[in-house]
Length: 187
Image (tube, rainbow, N blue to C red; front, side):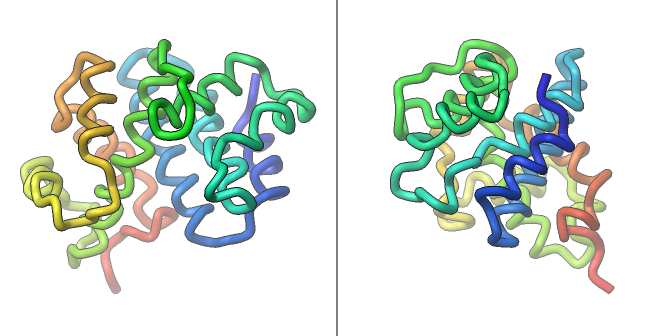
């Protein structure tokens, strides 16, 4: 089973850009929050979340096309590789998210971008963010416009949950890591 330490070791072999590591951490934390919600292994889900963009820096226009074989060679389990590939469903591949882990990763990859952007605009960062405040930003299509809201909504539907409920879980999880995610209160 992939551990967070191993995921960090593997990602460091393909990634150097600080913003990509920050994104990996955001997705990692959100995945941990959803794992706890579903009664799953949070540390395992966090490892998958951290590693999900394994090939992105080196192959941004061919994302996930250089993931499967290298991860297999590094000893990553087939189900873990599939979970990572499934976050590209209908964007760059046809690996449909089936498990709760796969559906969660598909959903939070984009969702954490909006949460991060909303938190950065607040004097207290994410520390006092309420779901109602987040939902106003989510509904504003011009805010964090590159984050695909249709994909987020589709992912939430796959989880049989409302966007506000998934977002609330992710926000609460991210509050615990506010400083590490660079969204704590401004000094």
